Image 1 (tube, rainbow, N blue to C red):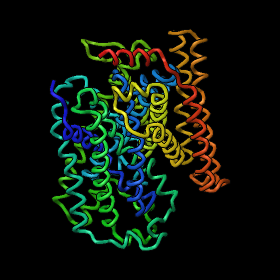
Image 2 (cartoon, rainbow, N blue to C red; image 1 turned 120 degrees about the vertical axis):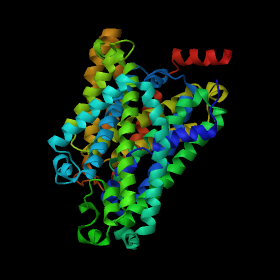
Image 3 (tube, rainbow, N blue to C red; image 1 turned 90 degrees about the vertical axis):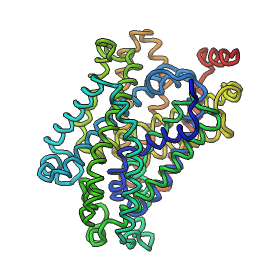
Image 4 (tube, one colour; image 1 turned 30 degrees about the horizontal axis):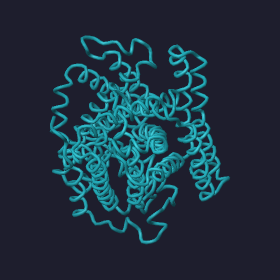
Length: 522
């Protein structure tokens, strides 16, 4: 089998990161943080890089399996924590589908002005009943295309990836050349950061920075087929994130200087409403050719991404069927019809419970942050229990024990920055997993063992509960009882405490020792 070289690995990483997020993120991040949105991208990418280093080690050492990342946790902890991670990952990935469907409908409505008032609410962010119904039909289209012809689907997506990378660059360059509202950047701290550090940090999760970088994990999944993986996997992720940070930062700069200055002066960044930001700006500057290009790609990009996420969510569901009703595992002519339908109903639930793109993306991001934190902990546990095995057979980077703890703390801070009440919604996602776990896992191992495993994993619930309480008491959307500095310091202390509790609860499992022994014999 041909090995995948560094350039190919970078292509998979960049292609996954530059998805449909560029269509909406620049607008939403600026509405939350103002011109300091550029710093949001830089800080967010640094945090993602630290977390990515932990993914590199874990996925490079432990064997891959159909599904999400939960099975990695089983090597260092237990089935309950493994289930929680898989549950969060599954819900997040299902949520990506309606997010892309919503972006598709929003940009489609911008092409048809008569449709815009039907699908979009007056605030320009939420969907109307008609909009939600049309978005549901798009998800139904995802279902039928995935069910009908996966081979044809993958071939089409391959040729669309390059287009997805080139168009954002072209848009940014043209807007920077045509628009000259550099006064929008602000000279004073207040005008550059009109909503304070709160807005800048909050936009990392709720504005779409985390959502944009979700695809950073892609090169890791090719670790087994990569040429010189110990060198090329870390380099591919590093270069992919850096390259995409430049693209997103320049695109953000282009958006900021392209917004008419009188709109900013009138009521501030939060008052600016665009349904399809870059199409609207192209219309303002009479760039009809650019508008036409964006219209075509803006429809293709989220639609193709939605198809990919649908296929991925089905794969994750197929690896999670032991915790779901038997009907989910039903196959028709080797086609996972049960999983396809499960993902469809999950997508529809997101659409009707969460009214707009930003709402869906916010819940996805705050849920994925829980996964990021636990994967950093898993890397710390592997460093503690299997350091020799990792050094000899896996991708082992210097300072593992430090950047695993740092990654866990940074992920916890991102969860906190999401702000109340979104932190409460993330806690609800965790709480919902409890009855599902007991209903299905107790049938497999018995209630007593299921309860013991859950008790050992309960520290994660207490950790997220405490961060949620601090966010409620703090200034990030809370009642302001705690100052910004005090609340963030508390989050760091709490996170370090629970990191070491989670580390103490880890174990040198039989699965891990068997895996190290098998590798030593190779």
